[in-house]
Image (cartoon, rainbow, N blue to C red; front, side, top):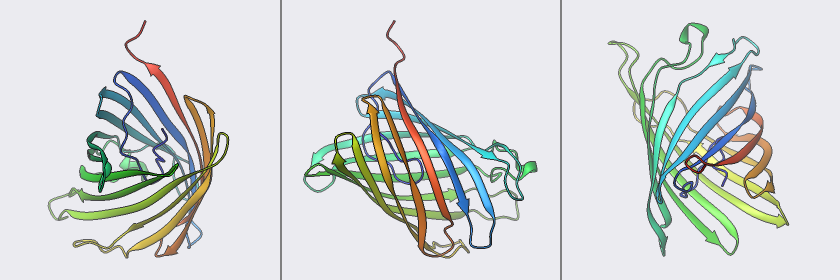
Length: 233
């Protein structure tokens, strides 16, 4: 069940004892001409029927004005609280912590420990999946003279079946301006096809384009692979 690591996630969890890996490639092209290339990777392990451990590690590739290296590691726990609620649908929370493990000397990683909380509501609209996310991140201070700030995120995402194993993803997302942040708010669209090669293997690709703000134009491609049970022999 792809979680679209570019932006959105759904409320569902991997089966207990199973490992699923989601990875891909994204290339960003900012308005000023700068380019960034990176690979976001998330490993998902089912802990219980309604709980999942997320471990993520982005890898940055050498590009214009940047060096290659490993980014900041993040750990999160997705906990599904409600199923089939008439208002909330399938509802989950995802608290996470990002650690300053990136090579800041090479311009990789933020050098801060950040704490985030995302609330997730997922719905089945006659075969079309809709996922709503709202999250906030408290960005830790990198030094005594740097007070903590906060960032926020919202997404509305749809998975639309087309024919057979082919589907289409469409998402609108934004980063609103919050107290303590000097970054202007942004709104962008993400869209592209997905293809279920097998029950345990999915492919997707597409592009991201801004509607407002400094969100860069981007292309992405990714895979989701349910490796299988970690406990079976």
